Length: 281
Figure 1 (tube, rainbow, N blue to C red):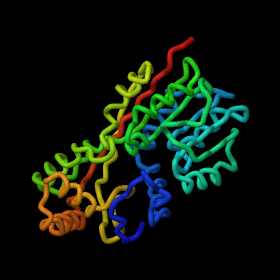
Figure 2 (cartoon, rainbow, N blue to C red):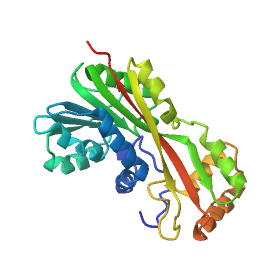
Figure 3 (cartoon, one colour):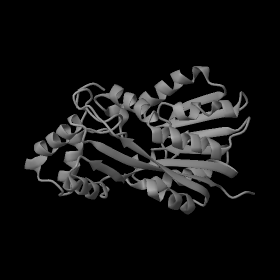
Figure 4 (cartoon, helix red, strand yellow):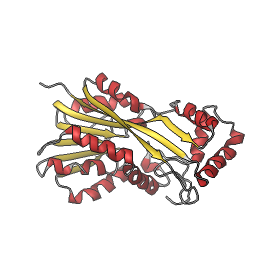
């Protein structure tokens, strides 16, 4: 991402963003997080996809997670990916050219899927619910399009778990307090995945979590820790929640940058996942 401070990363309106390539690059970076890799591996183990099945990916982004499962579906299987961003879908279509099964990536709405009832054998949605005003509506749609006995995997972040350690307990406590507030989107939806699934009529089979840790960061080499927002954006959040005075924002950011330059920076964030199933006939 270079040294350009993109300030705040958000995926509500990707195609309207002034720097779409940055958002796309960031998606690739977050796909390489240790926590993301661990949860996708866990998902594959528990979804137990079989030859010839149909898989739906809602909020598919660049399509990499679904395409990694294509081999399990075989040439008679199918992947359908839905994303609100045409830019993301265009990338996913390009990457799908060598897929091991039939693939269809389309622009669509996670809370109003243009797919038939009881059509898919399995479905997934990763780090999408946190960007939706009504995440329950999306999970309800997944229940509608899955066959009886169909399997679903939800993976999402809980930003209230964000912890920043620069050797200053006051900073750590301020960041934790600010991240507990949800402003305009359900950013802390990760820990509520099981409840959302049950409310949509699913039976939750198993749940897990994984924590991404940034142990080092060179602020002179990259504008933000890999795949994350900038520290100035974090400062804005603290100001918005009353944890930081606006006049202290620049000093707050500089203190974090100084800590990173002197190997006193560590940050962590937890993602949660559930596997659930619809009632068998």
